[in-house]
Amino acid sequence: MRFVLGASVALTWLLRDAGDGGAAFALVESLARPDTEIRVPATWHLEIADALVRAEMSGQITAADSSAFLDLLLRAPIEVDPATAELALSATLALARQYRLSSYDASYLELARRERLPLATLAGDLARAARAAGVTLVLG
Image (cartoon, rainbow, N blue to C red; front, side):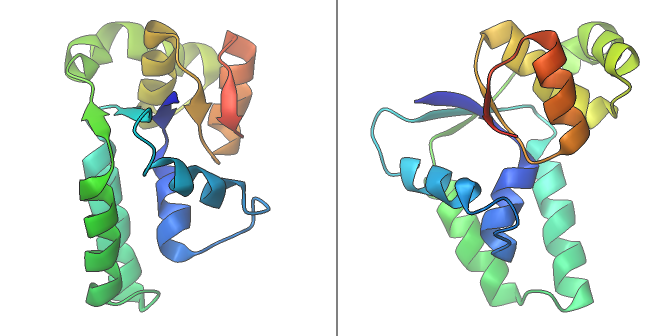
């Protein structure tokens, strides 16, 4: 299984939020399968780091929770897209404008479209834009 992983899904694993009916947790099981390939835009790690520090500062999670989550992510078959920065001021910006998305969300859409991969997201605006752009959703 190959797909683009939105930070919203990964953070659901950390915060154990089953608001999506648990569908995000089904994806975490795919991390152990040898045929799984996950692609993320170059900003993904910064989004994850920002969410970790915010959750720790608010008391939602502990540093130990963060460490366990990071261990999971470091073992996962996650590949960072090298073209995110190169396309930020062209294709990504155009998608952000067209679908009224943040540049961060548009980077997921751009990657999924370019690589012809399904997108796993729990971000409502991004899911709506993906549907409108003809991108298949794993979640959303």
